[in-house]
Length: 424
Image 1 (cartoon, one colour):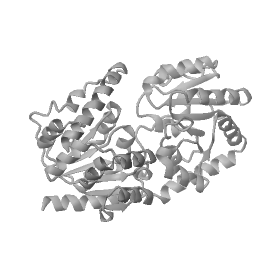
Image 2 (tube, one colour):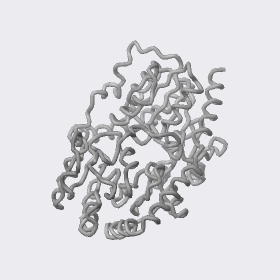
Image 3 (cartoon, helix red, strand yellow):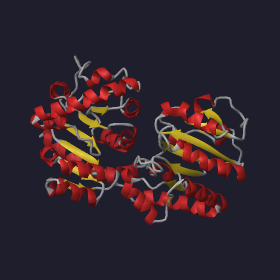
Image 4 (cartoon, helix red, strand yellow):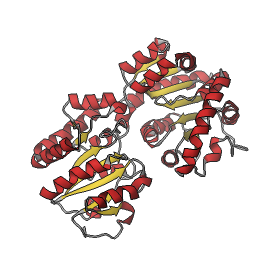
């Protein structure tokens, strides 16, 4: 079976490599992905946690903290795929932990890395399936568990089409802790034994149980006064910024005290976003250039986030938040972070990556959904004209988070049991 996966992965890798090179995504940690740089590494039966990128790494923050408390003398290995995720992981690990990149999913690479790391347990955040890695861990009798697991609409469709490949793979995973009953039903439909699945809820509700990373910014740092209103558009995508800035242009004409802060999902697109802002007649102000800005020099300005890991800081300063990836077909992004700060949250129609969370917030009247840029403009006007409704929306959002917290503690119990069994 591993020959099939090697062949499939080789095709995917060969097609993807030129794109990665052209986009400048070859980074200094790439050697670790090829299994290099592990010589001489000495670890003592660590727990290996994999979080593919920034969102997963941040989501794992509470669990990593609890693992440090539960296993104070055991090392953690934290792997990511992206450099931005790696930088977040560096902040979460202790000095004794080892932060690295996940090896490319070629059987000969993952076998060599696993033989060096020798984990007592492999924890996979959400459902990021790497066939050769999972098969190699299984062959070496290292238990694998999925935490905060989910099976999206697209994934379920793909897994069913290639069930002959994915069903044997899923059976090699020892345990699934999933977000919803829908995720459990889909795994059962794909051949996973029901007694290997538990519905524990969504760990994203636990991310902000404590103050998040990187707070400490004031509205005055943006040159704003008490009378100004700040709209933060977080995690926006290509073709979406034009829709958001277009809506804001109409808003700003009638409400000149409003200001827009755009945080592109990929900060390297900041200059592209600045050109869009300028096309609409705004001055672009990059976050990296804010130092010493003083009072806002130009009321017709748009702030653009061009740094990594600071979006929460500006969610905390916002009066209204629009969560991106939702006016275009990207599946949306995490609405829980602005909700924690009791901000009125707006999102578009394409929230399929956060389907259950978005539905819950709408059902509880804790967020607003818009279908297009025209509706976005109208909802922004509504919230500005009805501040009490905006405040109530934010309070309901934050209360909802508190009601649904607890998945991390449930997952810790599962991990303790499995590590205890492995140590026997």
